[in-house]
Length: 386
Image 1: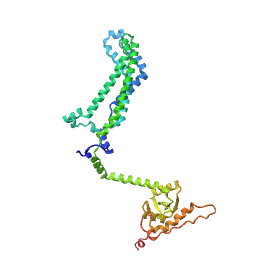
Image 2: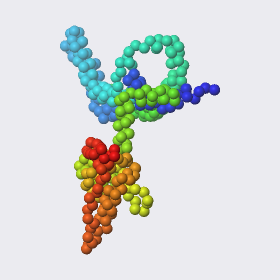
Image 3: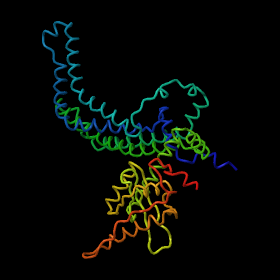
Image 4: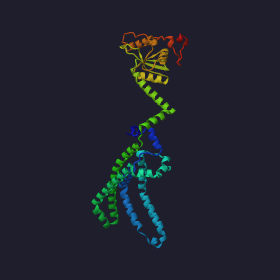
C-alpha cells in the first residue's frame, strides 16, 4: 500500500506559488484573450462599421479607376498602389490598436503580468523524448485535444446555422451593385462575427477556471514537503522575527480588548499603565488585565477613556504592578494592602450622590520590597534581600 504522505494532496503554500511564479509558471488561459479580442473587434465594427463600409467601397472603386496620365505612364502605378495601401492601412489602424490593447489587458487577467528569464531560458529537458511523449500523450494533452474539438464543433455549428439561414442572401450578393453588395456582406459578416464571439466567450468562461484549477493541481504538495518547507522557513532568523512580532501584535490586541472590562487603570501617570479588574463577589484577588509602558501605556489610557474606565495616578504602585505581575494573573499578596484602598475608592466614586461626601483619595503604601524605579530595578535591594 502506498504511503499517503507521498501523494500531492495539499494545497500549495504561498512560498511554493511565489517560487513557481518566479520560474515563469502562472495560470494562463489562451481562450480568454482570444474571446476578448473578438469582442473588441466586433464592438468596434458595430460602432464604425458603416463608415468603414462606405470608405471601403470608395477605395475599391478608386483602385480600379485610372486616369489617362496613369495609363500612359506605367511608372506611376507603384506610387498609386502605395497610396491606396497606406489609405487602407490607416482605415484599419483603429481596429488594430483596439485589439492590441485588449489583447494585452486580457492576457493578464488570469495570471497577471510577469516576466521571468527562467521561462525564456533554454531547457534541455524539453529535448528529452520521454518528456516529449509525456506531453503528447499525457492528461493535459488529452484535455487540450478535447477542448480543441469542442471549440471546432461549436464554431462550425454556429457557422453552419448562419450559412443555412442566410443562404438566399449570399446567393443574391453576386447580382447586386458593388456598394449595396458590400453593405449587405458587411452586415452578414458582422452578425456572423457576433455569434462566433458569443461561442468563444462560452469557451473562455469554461477554460479560465479550468486553467486556474489545473495550475493549482500541478503545484500541489505532499504532507512531507509542507513539513520540510515549514522547518526551513522557521529556521530562518527573519521568519522567526516576523513570527514573534506577529505573536506580540496578536497578544497586544487581545490585551487591549480587555481594557474595557477593567475597574481601574493605575498610571505612572505617563510611562506605565496597568488595568485591574476585581470581582467583589469572588474570593480572589484583583486580576491584571493589561499592562504597558510608554506607547502601549498611552494606548491603554486612550482605550480606558473611550470606555469610561477610571484612572488612578500612583507612580510607585504602577511600577510595582508592572514589574511583578503578568497579564491575566492575580496581583502579589504583598500588594493587597496597597491596591485594596484604590479599588474601594474607585467603587465609591460610582456610588457618589448629591449630598454624600465622596471617599478621600487614598495614598497607597508600597512595601520596600516592591519599590522599583523606571528601569525595573529595586530602589533598595538590601531590604529585598533581608
